[in-house]
Length: 297
Image (tube, rainbow, N blue to C red; front, side, top):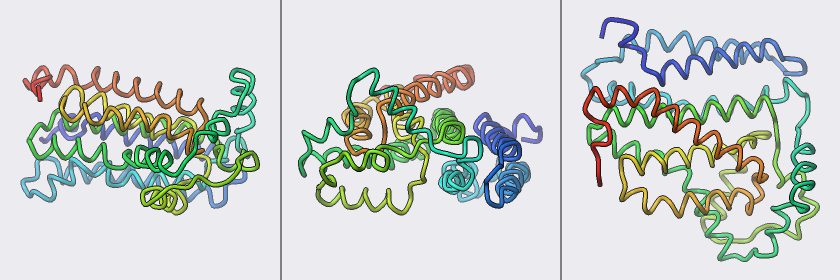
């Protein structure tokens, strides 16, 4: 593990590329971004810090260090997601919901989230919120299953595909900021969606953890689709019960007023591309290691 090629894995490279890209974009488009230089420093420093971290942690025998070596990108993703809100309007200076609303109205003749309100009920809302909430644990369930069973090449492909979907989505938020129908179309709804326990929990998560403008593409849809497709490759039994959750998640994003249909379509495209890219990058390595499609359960 002494060479740079052995130390850097595709997911590490993707992370560095994302951090550098954000630093460059914020530098170029910082008009109106308060303390824009802090985002440049943070992302540049993080990119530089990855190199010594990988040199230290790659091949380390301590189980905690080894675990962090494999999981460090998923662990820190939330921090860099929250950073986006500070510079998200750097390019356009405004949210672009009006473009999506006009496009969907011209194609569909309706506002989909408003139209779906006619079916709203507490039980249905709870089902939808459960499906939407499944996004938070689908990836960890698959990842932990692969990691603790020692299927590390499959785990690495999973991480690469998932973080690729995240990073494309994050850059999409910056390039095309959209705040979502729950804000822009709020006057058209008859009232809030009522549910039960998970509805209250998900509403709280969205209130304290969601960023303004992070809708296009839907990272929920993109990442959930990637996880599902990878589950069908590595954990077929797991994929069977994940499928209805992911299917309902795609519907719930619009029903719950978090996304436009366009966000969902874009999320599906990002998810399919990320899954394909993971196969292109890691497929040959899995073949060489003898792990490719070895899991049949």
